[in-house]
Image (cartoon, rainbow, N blue to C red; front, top):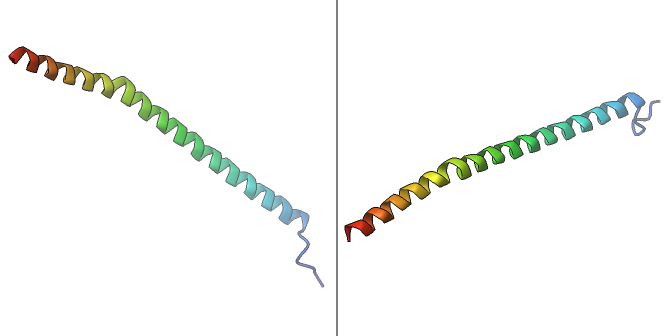
Length: 67
C-alpha cells in the first residue's frame, strides 16, 4: 500500500520548479511595472511639463500685455 502523505522526490522537484516559475513571473511583472512607471515619469517631466509651462506663460504674458 502506497502512502500519499509522503511526497516523492519527483513531486518535490516539480513543486520546486513551480515555485521558481512563480517567483520568476512575479519578478518579470515587477520589472515591467518599474519600466512602465519610469517611461511615464520621463514623458511627464521631460515633455508635458515644459509644454504646459510654456502655454501658461504665454497666456499669462498675453493677458498682462492687454491690460
